[in-house]
Length: 450
Image 1 (spheres, one colour):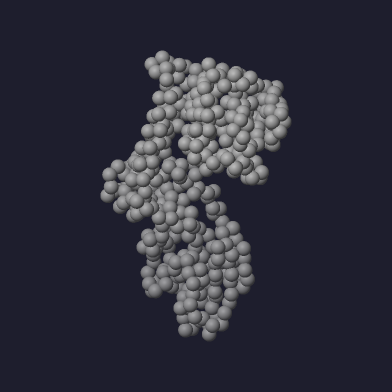
Image 2 (cartoon, helix red, strand yellow):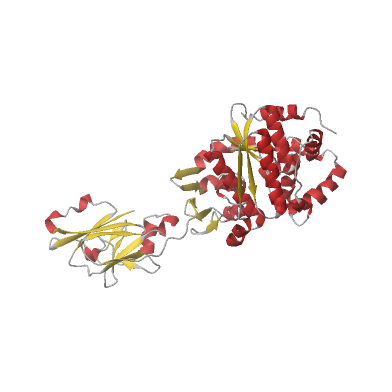
């Protein structure tokens, strides 16, 4: 039976969720299935400006081509822009060793965003509906989740909107039949091999025997959970402002602000969610707060290191190459993978040590034996720090005393001469043996710039 006022319900949902579609332009992600075809029809009936995007994943042969043909014809009939592409889905999955579903998702959303920006669409709309939301919540529940996960799919996330979340699958099908809309069926939806299909075909029908209004009940629950999540965020933000600080791409979390408040693991999980850490990892990190420094935890996008008083979160990058740079001559400039090195030989009368920056060091030119070498510091490295008159010190101890944060320690390099003696821990301390004295005849200046 056709639900009365489907278009009215659509417009009401848009207004209630403050989706400003009037006067803006939206890119609709259209697969050719009934959900996305209904989304197109509702946009058309509402008079909103839109274009259609369709990605052919090439996974179902002629079926995939048929989907593309239907969507292209739909755009032509409505006289709206059509954007189409074909994806090498299997190749991406094989190359990156990920599932077909993950590869398809990454490909389509990256392409949708590219089209949206290139053609100046304000929003990207997908046809997720109430049943999708329920399935997502149950999937998340089976894996373990918090408020946000059980809430399901967000109505809006940046330019991505889901204006069909108010409608059940049954309402969508009734509307499509009443409007005599053409659509395509995806044969893979019949398989219970995929977990979402298993939940859709076997779990939800059992739950609906208990509660025939399961979708509407979940919508109400979703609304309550969203309100609870918003209130929790409002409560935690003042604490977050004290516990968190940012310096360029690095985030620092105060251990004291975690340990002095209730539920440190939950607070950590809330703070670390944007960085890709799971709740289980937050539990492990919370357990390590009083432990030794140096412990690391890795998410798909970031690395967290436990330091003395803070947790340090940095983006994941490829490990820097353990490059050794050889300096053959006492004059010249050399480009390296991590910066530019400049060497100059100066007369002793030109030496003004007090004006040296941390990136520049001065040495007795006659004390150093060429060729010189710059490399990352290693465990066991030691030298005689300037001013300590012959007393040796491990580089690791110097870094501890200088309170160099753990992520920065990996970037520290040392300068050695041809005899293997460390002459400079770059940016921190030179060696006493190579100091400039009143008897120095020439000065070697070495500057390192990132």
